[in-house]
Amino acid sequence: MDFTLTPEQLDIKNAAREFAENEFTPEIMEKCDREEIYPAEIVKKARKLGFSTIKIPEKYGGMGLSLFEEVLVTEEFYRVSPGIGNACLSSTFGCELLTLFGSEEQKEKYLRIITEKYGVSAMATTEPDAGSDVAAVRTKIIKDGDEWVVNGTKTFITNGSVCDFVLVLGRTYEGEKRHHGLTFAIIESKAKGFRATKIRNKMGLRASDTAEIELKDVRIGDENILGKPGEGFYYLMEFFNHTRPRVAAQAVGIAQGAFEHALNYVKHRKQFGQPIAAFQHTQFRLAEMATRIQAARLLTYQAAWQCSTGRAKPELSSMAKYFAGETAVFVTDWAVQLHGGYGYVADYEIERFYRDAKLMEIYEGTKEIQKLVIARRLIGSI
Image (tube, helix red, strand yellow):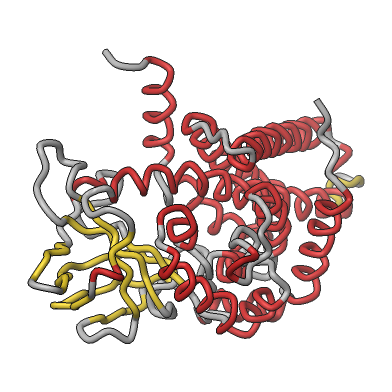
């Protein structure tokens, strides 16, 4: 098995690293984190260079590449700044649903808003009382004559207050099973009855926009219903197969960035007359951190490669997301510990990595949900 990147993939990886290191300056990272500023200009620059449209087909103005190339870019962006990296690369969040299940007319309209007008997309599934339990959503998407009426509240929505359109999951009818009868609707932020409120004081990823969305009697036509009504749950599960390796790559990038900060620090910080890197305990800890990062990276690459070749495996995507998420938390925790008291203050970037890492175990399916997916695939029906 050959793990060597192609010349094109290596160019993409290097270009992403160069962009992140040049654009995500310490001053900008600190300001965006402290003041919770969405870095719109950097997001636009990343879009112009194609970093956030890698998987959108060339036919609609995207790069037309695979999830594997997207994973390479993701790792490099998050290695430098998880918050700004998330703002840039999640600016097209939800477009996978359009690519997978949208009509030709929907793709032409909405994907081109992204690629030609530098628009921002979002996807809204989570509600105040429906997180891991997707089938419990209460948002209603009900047919009314020639239109559909949408009512409900969504929370923790990435890009919620900066998006041009959002793909909303709601219930169209009550099915025999709870996960039947769910539908995705495409709603533009300028629609009457749409209101978004930015969520502030997050623990991490503070440069990324997160909002609560209220939908009150929002009216849309048939052309804004994604795919077949009632199939939304199944669309979402397929969507996760393709996006969880990307979250795994985010976690790998965070772990790698934190590790590099820690490695540099222990080489220069002296205690008891020598660099703390000279102590065996420090060396063992660095070895364990590096090993876990590499294991998470390879698992992530495998999951992304499976998706890129049309052979996505839900259990593999969940394994990558679960293990990489735990790795990010483990590595950042020890990176702070190796910094000692300096790791606990904002003067050193490592405390920000520590705060950013935790979300990797929560969003797009908690680590508990990932374990459940893996176990069910292993055991099968009981």
